Image 1 (tube, rainbow, N blue to C red):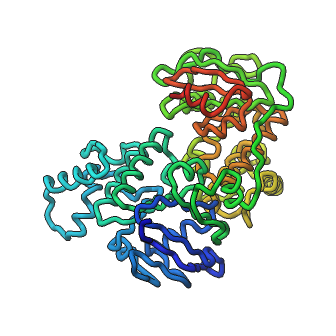
Image 2: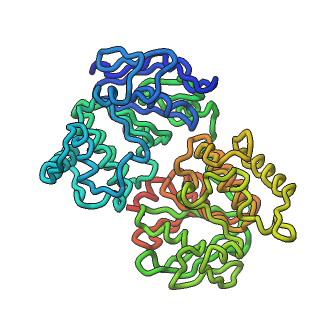
Image 3: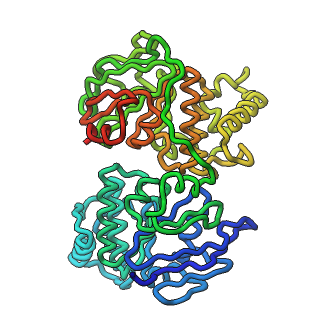
Amino acid sequence: MAETLLRAQSIHKSFVGVHALKDVSFSIRRGEIHCLAGENGSGKSTLIKIISGVYTPDAGHIEFDGHRYSRITPIEAINLGIQVIYQDFSIFPNLTVMENLALNTELAANRKLVNWKRIRRVAEEALAKINVRIDLDAYVGSLSVAEKQIIAISRALMFNTKLIIMDEPTTALTKKEVRNLFAIILQLKERGIATLFVSHKLNEVFEISENFTILRSGELVATGSTKDLDDKKFSYYMTGRTFESRRFVPKTVSKDPIFEADRVGIPGSFEDVSFALHGGEIIGITGLLDSGRTELALSMFGMKPIREGEFRVDGTKVELTSPRAAINHGIGYVPEDRLSEGLFLPRSIGDNIVITELDSLTKKFGIVDAERRDEEIRTWVGNLAIATPDPDNACQTLSGGNQQRVVLAKWLANSPRILILNGPTVGVDIGSKHDIHTILQELANEGMGIIIITDDLPEVVENCSKILVMKNGRIVAKLDAEEADEQKILSYML
């Protein structure tokens, strides 16, 4: 058995009297792939920052490569061989791939003059270590998320790296990109480099990790081999709750469709797409990233008007040429990226909730009815169990799951009949994911027509009464829930 590389021993950390970590201990061997899991607020980020020297523990210590440290600095951690790849990758979008890869080595060598041949050679060697090719002269801002991640990994390996910590590395990746990332992690393992893989995605924990550590509310609740873990145990350790796995079955479906797509298309994006949505149904539209599913979602909300075919609401043709037109026809849209498209993060939680209904809350002379506004905010904070001590707090103070509830509240406050959700649970933890699914199923049972667009196949199978599979801009399969399973859906996607 490989020797222990990292041991965190009885780590404690508090901020202004709030315990972020309480007596947390775990270890990682050389070359091990170890998953650190936990819901938002569980203490994962704090533990990462203690290991990498950003924070100093209040009590406890870190042992690394046979030496004990009560505190280390970020520079010392890097020199020891600890590298952290955060979700934003900490790369420069306005610089080229070559410049991003070589910058740290140039700074470390304290070089005063630029030698472009040397910089290109350094960058080429960095990418060669994980056997990938990327245009060295491309600006990083123009690259895909997966390519940016590869650059971050390659840059980390330019030093004497012994442990790479990856913080939620698959959040914005497609299934194919995730497989490529896992292949790279396995390459690192073969070279004796350990990986601490931070995730709350159940399938990833089982697929890539040998061992796991799960935190909840700052405390260690379980650590061990993934061989001893199953779905129910994982969910319980993460949340302290037990979830029953069951498929959604509509209670009542409207006789006539409330929304129809009839041979709709946008040349170059998707074509000849037809389906009907009834009140009470949840339709799932799935496919790989380039399948056309996102463009279809945007067209249904008027953000990318169709060029071919027609949309109908209650049997009548409608022109969805703008989001305002879609809203006027009773359509709401929860976007794929809630941070940049769904929320005004610096504004209050309350402001975000009522933004879509300001007109109805405004009295004469453009004055907002404060009493009705506050009542509306209290209603939705309560109905969707948004965890906040004060709705006047900025939306950016919430966890990912609670931010997603705010986006839902914003649209539900506008009383839509048709709700389109693009990646409704991306980046939220298991407990919030289950709660959001419950909310959507309850809305459908109250008569709303819901469309979920996602490549999360368990989400599709558990929540959708009909499933449409897209590939190369076309619908290649229409499945009823009873006949669908993940493998069958995946076979059409690929």
